[in-house]
Length: 214
Image 1 (tube, one colour):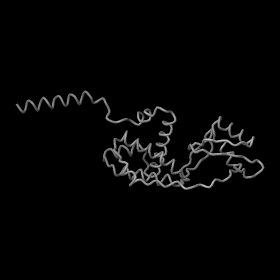
Image 2 (tube, rainbow, N blue to C red):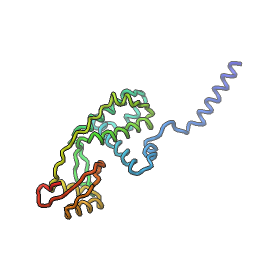
Image 3 (cartoon, one colour):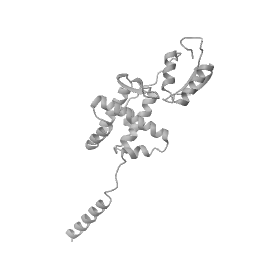
Image 4 (cartoon, rainbow, N blue to C red):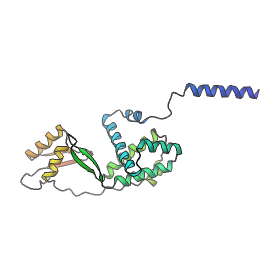
């Protein structure tokens, strides 16, 4: 009787497992990005992963897909904290060897500059969500605050921009923003401008001074 019961339980278990094998237990990277319905949110998450790829390729010559696969095989949560902390340290420093090209025609070289702590925190939250939803890691807030240290944002003294910086700003801007910047420059007007890192800057141009004062 025991043998028959064991056989039936085993049979139905394997039958159920086979029938449900087409359903994935975790999201793929593409599904993770598509689940962000807002285009701006999706773009921010995607760029966070791009920055994480740059970090991991420069340090270990592997991308985020490779590291996620390796960590899932070991299922080492503590290593995830170590990697996230290493990313924070890396993002807090300049990396002149990493150069991207920006501007309308992607012709303006832009070496990697240390990121603002607010930007690092935003990237870190997106990367953490990637590890949790795609890698199936449970990361606690307590361990994150203990293992991953984000530097505090320091107070920055605002300085006037010079003509070269203004030209670079216009060259890198979209057509709509470039038009706005040029109008502000030519009229000497004051306005609020959203920069790519979402920081609100206030420009006031005095064209009689060099550098331009703001």
